[in-house]
Image 1 (cartoon, each protein chain N blue to C red):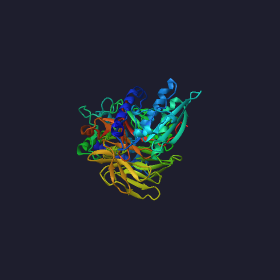
Image 2 (tube, chains in turn blue, orange; image 1 turned 90 degrees about the horizontal axis):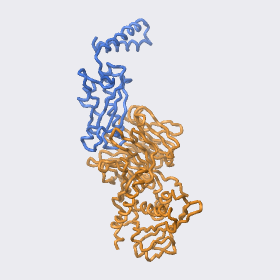
Image 3 (cartoon, one colour; image 1 turned 120 degrees about the vertical axis):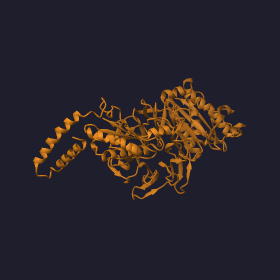
Image 4 (tube, rainbow over the protein chains, first blue to last red; image 1 turned 30 degrees about the vertical axis):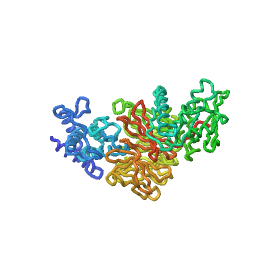
Length: 173
Length: 450
């Protein structure tokens, strides 16, 4: 069963469960639940893991760590095409691994005021969260926190450092 | 005589003082206080004051501390930029008593004021200091007062004397007995960074750590009674607002909502706290009643609304918003909700603070890509840039409205700077222990003396 089929089934079951309060047929509900639950679990076990042995580092099919950091322009919270395709991979991983969750961190460079940067960092994290949710990730799997300019990746005070510091990071747990 | 050349004199005097502060650095390092204070510039025609040692006749063990009182007073007055204290080396005599003061000698030296003091040691070890401020032009004693204290409190006494002398001569209430709170970061930028909230005297001395964490701390703000500070701490991994009594007696989390809990700032009456919460989707300004803990939402906008501060009368809130495309300063009336944009020059104006008069604004302003502290007269709308450093932020105004303290960078190191509102005076407060930032000047506080 392919990913699309699974998704369809999950969606169907969600719809039916969702309707069950008004639906009059307990039989239909019973059937769907019975059918879908064990099937998903057994298939999951057969597929190769999306994570390294530590359980929190997402890896690709060659076992290489997938990038979890995405960069932004100055005073911007717009995700570029590269970031979007990178985040699509994370969306798929999260959908395949409903027991995993992710904390999205938003960061800024040191220019500007600290509290404004706290807000800007949140705006960056929100952009990532919105994309993941629109890609079908359950909102319960996603959390976010802004560190503003408080946790620079590079403590330098030049444009090279600033570029590295304007970022969002996905941390799995 | 060189004395009349105030620039020369200031430099000479300060080389002595700076040396003194270097010598005292062992103590400074141990206590974590802020280091040497460097004067960038002063007034063109400062008031010339001579301060003679207050230690005359005191027993050996007490003399040093009593001597330091006159040094601390001189340094306080010099830091204001409005005074040029005379070097002891240039004094013809060093009288302690009025009967030994020859007005004509001081007139010849070009002195405007003379400050003398007498000490008396009581049986219990308490010291009584009596001091007189003599106006050399009139030859009259303009001010006389006395303090009784334990010798360990000599710094408190010195700042009290400075406050009195400053107010007597300038007519402006002195703010030397105030405190500054700030964040010290050891090993900033590394994985081992340690953040702490420090409270020091207004001259950077006697710092005390009231809280320490391996997670970031920012946005320190004083309660109007000077008893507690509020700040944002990431100690749980998320930003939350902490209320902390300065004497260490009580510490509590005020808010811990989802998202941002930031920019806490006490209302002028101390009953409410303005803050930024993003629990409803994006950063908005709220006011919390500190007694009932009930929240009132002030802004409702999909843009960033942050960095609230109160008008001195508590009737309106200033805040930073990028609703117009870039961060600018807005003011909202709390009764009518009337909203007004205050800044129009430049494309980055943020974190405003109103002066006690309510008519003048100090804020972070970007000009040609660099960040400075600027001042704006609200009635005229004109902007004056007050700082020459870069990456300047977090201005906090002294309670008498004459100066503000802010954070800046010096060779990649976070330091504090103080500048007068008219831009005439500047000094720096670096720390040998690490980066210092997020300064907050306390309100007038009740001194332990008298």
